[in-house]
Length: 324
Image 1 (tube, rainbow, N blue to C red):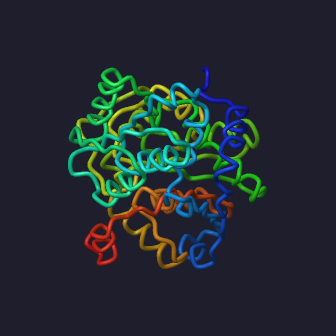
Image 2 (cartoon, rainbow, N blue to C red; image 1 turned 120 degrees about the horizontal axis):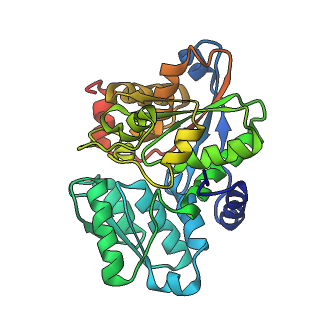
């Protein structure tokens, strides 16, 4: 199969974003290792330390810096539940590119305010991300905008792959990664780098049990869709497979598990108590997956990507109070 990006694409993306973003820390925490157990040495990649508190800023800087001047002048659009739109708004403001962001009705109000705060036009459309994505595609035709798709975009995936370049440079002893999957940009970026540079490293994926279309499709060996995507991890709330990401996931992953909302909430609490970092539910999903895989990964050095920390106050309160 032809992969959507190559290691050269990832390296080129890194050079484009390097003037604007510093590498994020990769850290180990003895209390976290103790909770995970089984002799596993956990390394946490802190994408919650990005300017927008989420890794998607890499994806969007990679995408916008690859555009020609005329496309930048016309402007860009995307559908989002939050972090992709926030990253695109931030990158657009930095580079002087007009940005329109479509979000579902009832989207996280804190993320909406942050998107608008970076100068983007915000449009509410659809009941979930997939419907919102359809609305954004219509606006591409009506307004002549360029779509920066969070999944089916080569430059977006190449930007996501820069995280794994940094992980390998910081952790040459790495044995495995556990990555969360919403649409798959993070995981396919990871797989692109691993297969080129360290093919012996195993890559495991985790998806929210309430939004498990790609997980179910991976185990079935063919694309499936689901009628709904219900999870506290809004960054993982998709209900379809995607052209650019499903084939590489099918070929490259070692295994794929799901985590319930209760398990994801517990991972948020564990990260808070052991690393004193705030993770949104999607950002903690990697740890939730590791806790389910720890017997298989006993004695290994395993990297997790804390993909974001943009949790709203009401969800955080419910998690800390044990209501989930």
